[in-house]
Structures are given as C-alpha cells and as structure tokens.
Image 1 (cartoon, rainbow, N blue to C red):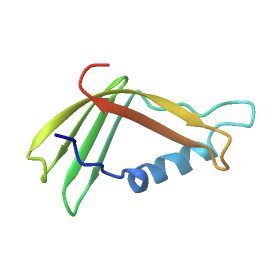
Image 2 (cartoon, one colour; image 1 turned 45 degrees about the horizontal axis):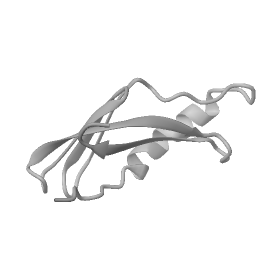
Image 3 (cartoon, rainbow, N blue to C red; image 1 turned 60 degrees about the vertical axis):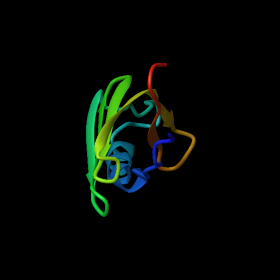
Image 4 (cartoon, rainbow, N blue to C red; image 1 turned 180 degrees about the vertical axis):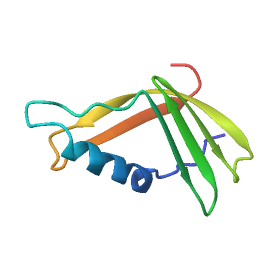
Length: 90
C-alpha cells in the first residue's frame, strides 16, 4: 500500500523564508536537526529528527516511519530547504 503524498511546502515556506534571511551569501542554509510541522483538513503531523521522521494523519489513522535526508536548494532565490524521505528502512 502506498502512503498518501502530503504536501508540506506551505508549512515549510515560513521556515525557508526565515532561514533565507539568516545566512550570508558565503554561508549555505542548514536544516534544523529537529522540526515539527502540522496541518489540517485533513489533520496531519510530520516530525523530523535528523535522518528519521514520523508522518501521521487522520486519513491514515496510523504513523508512518520515514528515513531520508535534508538538502539545501541554495541555487534558488531565496534558498529552499527540503527533507525527502521514504517509508521503511533505507
């Protein structure tokens, strides 16, 4: 069974904007080691802790364990930070 794809772009947009204002041109933005995003309609929560994350939603009625990594897309203006993961073991 494939997990539903949830877009967390809106939740992370504020983070990306605030981090983009922080580093100077010589610095690359860095992803926080721990991050929690929540949303509604339907309710969902994403907890990132380094290379692991947990995604839960009211639709799934369960928690999905993810493994992944962060990536700075500093070629964009402003820079964007992305965490991509897959379900299960790496």
